[in-house]
Length: 483
Image (cartoon, rainbow, N blue to C red):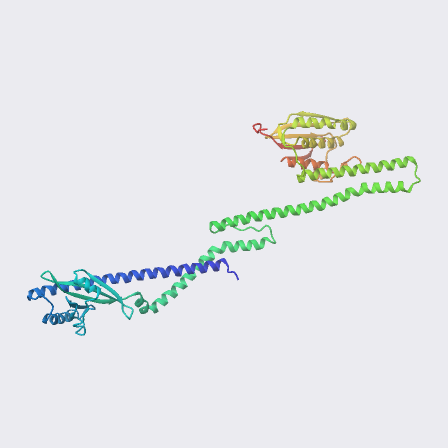
């Protein structure tokens, strides 16, 4: 099984702490050992030099020229008395390399040590020093100094002593070291545990938020902790926001699709029923010529309704789904409105309604054909609900940096209950329930889709003096924008 981040951090911190503690301990123990050796070497060298100087002076005073004879015995006795209270051992070696005096006793007298490196260096007049590890783990240090008489080297003083080493420190203090190491481990573990909990707390909150997001898309986490986890929390919240938005949009889309299928089924049922009944009647025969013509006209009329409905649905799908490519450019909204009104003049004249265009509007960015379609649909809707002999006005203006187009009629107005649903698909206001005079209920939905695709807004309202007004607002195109 894979461990958690907290466990890995805990292990990593402990390893680092132990490695650092071991490294520092080894370094400081080595430094302490080296310091002890330096101090011991300084002491032994001082003792060796003092002994060599005193011996040289004594030999000269007695008129001797070497360490042979009674001189060696007297030196051994003197060394034994001088070093009895000292931890150092001093030997005197003559020029041939034989031991002539030893503060430790007579066991080594006559032994030849002339091959030792430190002795050879001292007999040449140099300073000699060597170290070795004793069987008990301590470090032994050997220091030599030449004995000079009348300018000649007649022998060597040989000082030696031992001191502690890392091994002896670990052996002597292993009980205390075990306690210190155990205390260090406990403290390091406690501190590391607190640190890992603090560092991984934002990650645990993210984990909880991610688990809850599966069932509740409104879940958010509070950005906290180091920069990486803070940025991760911000990214998580952004992702959750997108998921929630997508979920809402998907639900709304599913609702729209369901309603669309229901509305289309309802709209298709009536003309299909009329066509079927007329066809069955004609198929049955035994009808006069007048009725036959009427039934045929019914079939044609209902077929036209189906064709118009299909065309409107395809048009709406192209606009909302952006399946068609539209030429986008500068559009003179005033000119587009006048062209749309001219195209609707025959229908308006047939209904006995006059349409006038007033004012000027700034240039906008969009599709000329689509915007003319907006004006045409609104004018057709207005003339449809305006009594004969009255007027429809198309008023153009600029307000707060926007191009504004208003279509004002002198009809009976819109019932307040219908204002909120006026732009929904297949919706017909209460004053226009008659399918013979009303459309399929898609005209205003198409208008809203076109306006929305141009980043504009549309709203409907009733005028205090009577009639309705539809207001379209579109972003004004900056005159400095290149063509």
